[in-house]
Amino acid sequence: MFCPLSKHICVSKGLALLPFVALALAQAPGPKYEEWTKYLLSAPDYRLEQVLKGKWPYLEVLRKDRLQEYQKGPCDPQKDPNACQGRMPWAEAQAHEFRLPMSSLEATREVAKDLRKAWQRFEERYYWRVITQLNNPAFYLAFCTFGLKGPDLNPPLPEVKLNIPSESLDTAMLGKLTPFDPGKMASAGLHSLDRYLPIPQIPRQDFCDDLGLEILPIMYIPGFKVVIQGWEVFRTPGYPSRPLWFNWDAADARVKAAMEHAWQKYYPEYLREVAEILLKPRPSDPGSFVSNLGITDFANLGAPKVYLPVPWQGHLLNGGAVVAPVYTELVPRDPQVLWNTLQNMWNTYKGLIDRAGSEVEKVYYYVHFYRSARTLYNSRAFYGIPGLADTLKQGLVRLIESPLRTLTQGIPVLKGCTGSLDQVADCAASALMKVDWAVKAGNDVAQLTGNKPQNEPIKAGKESPGLWKFEEAKRWLPPASLPVYEAFGYTTFFQAMNILEATNVPDIRNIDLSQINASNWVGWAWSQLSRLIVYWHMPITIDIRVEYCPPCVLAYPSPPLEGPAQPLGVPPYTLPFVAERTHWRWVSVPEGYEVPGVMGTPYKVLGDLGGIAPDLSALYRPLLGR
Image (spheres, rainbow, N blue to C red):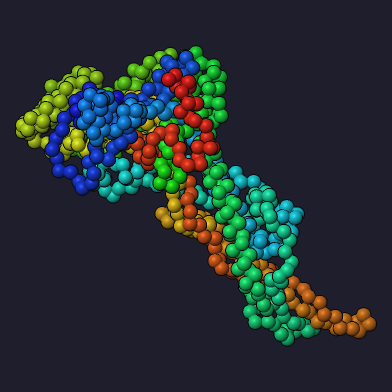
């Protein structure tokens, strides 16, 4: 939960029973936690009991600077003219708490799919407008008149890839985990088509608008060769690759006109399509899905597919993001699946322990993980689900009991911790409090720890709340069900935002250099070659023969013997792109920590976005029961 202490440091639920204290330690360069935090993930109110009553689970975020002003109380300039000096308006201070409804993970994957499809449509419109206008009349007749077309765009659901944003990670953690790989955005490399075809994958209306048949000006005089009785006697320079003459001025004008049309019409339509995808709830009437759940107990809650976006000023460049906290299920119903989730979480923590933890820190990790997991399997949400608590508890004992008991015997302050695993964990938590208080008092802790290395089992409150490595590790935890979030004190967010990029179309960077193989290399090369700006010209052969018809001389053109139609590169040769593109990601945020990637105020939208979506705060209010 959020704990407004004297320094307004937020402490996670998982650590609420251990009052960690400040320890003056050498800090890595960078801002202190309390200086750069503004929007803090506060007490999640999943209220599963309320879902059964038709109310939807949500979490809260707190605007820290406004909360601090609110805690000072209102000021009255009439009683004291100086009382309000330097204070923010009272109405603004009161608006320090914001509620964000939960969305399903699968619904956000569908949103990501639609974002990718919107980009694919723009990319196709951009290219086929340019190439069709340049190669008019041939391509105009094929694509705009006869409607030659390939299959519709239909990208698969994007994979959920967790992003660990380094800008929000504790500065000391960056030093502890080297080399540090924060992970790419989930959208990295997905601004591309699934396959590049020599025919459009969009309807002709998408790129033939305001385009007519152009026969004049003449674009080229074809290159040719003359053959007499099978013997070549003449060919034009560069035949068959180059025409005899090419109208470069007309080609340049056509390409520029087509690109200008794409940027003036297709790109704004792409931006609007993205905004509608991101800002409109699914279903459009959020109240409808609650009444249709047909639920009577926790076991029937399932995972309703719901997308309830919150514009945090919106996704526009430097404006913030559109966010949605996500769940995999409201309540897990399969004990084995839940255990697999818990084991994967343990593997994440264990990896961190092995890389960055001392023996004393390992005890902290084991104790806190076990106590969080114990909260999970004792949750009321699992009542009536046979075998779930037993499955979790037995698995946890196998993971934790043996190494924890071994560690307690090697650290003097913990040697008295015996009994069941529950008793050992509770005893260890109390014993570790003695270490914390000894550190706070400035006493030597060597006797308590047995001279074991004491590498920051607790951390200065000025930088981050709670047991910092335990908390920061939650950024690597995947999306989960509501009881898992509540027990471990974190939440995963879906976020979408625009990023300014300068590249080409298709993006030349869309190849994973760490996974180079023949297949993806050929695919990448084809994507680049198939989207070059070229004029297709047809070299011809003038074949002169003496035929007996009675004897006469015939001369007629025929397809070139050297090959088919030839491409002639036209500047700028590849389509440039210098503008905003919409990216998406999933990020996990520990409770009491800053929500990354957002700016301004939740539910406040920038500029023209307000005309696309309804007032979502008003729309969600009855849904959340407030």
